[in-house]
Image (cartoon, rainbow, N blue to C red):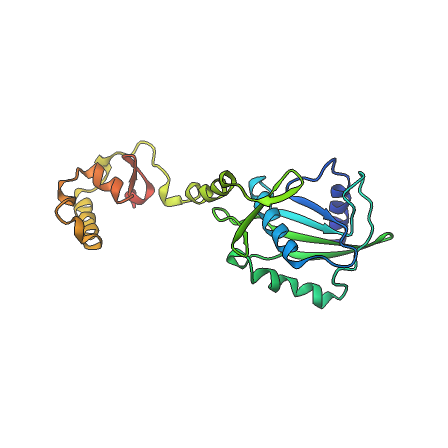
Length: 223
């Protein structure tokens, strides 16, 4: 982002009528607890995913109220090398070693502002901090609830190209020799089912082999 784009985004955030689940303001005038920083990283990453945002934002040096929010400035990690080390420090304790896209410093007439740009959780995989998933309940930091965890995890299935149903395709479109070969390979993988597999109808076998879903042909079956 250019300095002008960052300034415009900061101005936009300062004027939000209320904190959203994917934007959080902290005064952090001199310091801020590292573990709390990690929890907010997890929560803002997960909420950004759930709200269809590319990034969540944690902003230091700004009061939460009133609106527009006043800048008070922050001296959190005033040396840039010390600030840059946060990327590795955060990655060491998150899932998939996810870390800040960038930590932006903005100088204003009212003091220094830090804008932590946090990537949205990967599709299908909630972002954890020290093995725990965090989210937001309005303005409050809290554990990510089970429904939201499942909402993110289901994204992996929706994005699975091979699992997409091929409309109009039927079992008649599949080569019998290919199905027979698939049965042989299935038995090799699951030898305890050697006697049972030959008794299954093709549809039953393909469903159990996860080549079909509910008897409907997937892209995996066509391939």
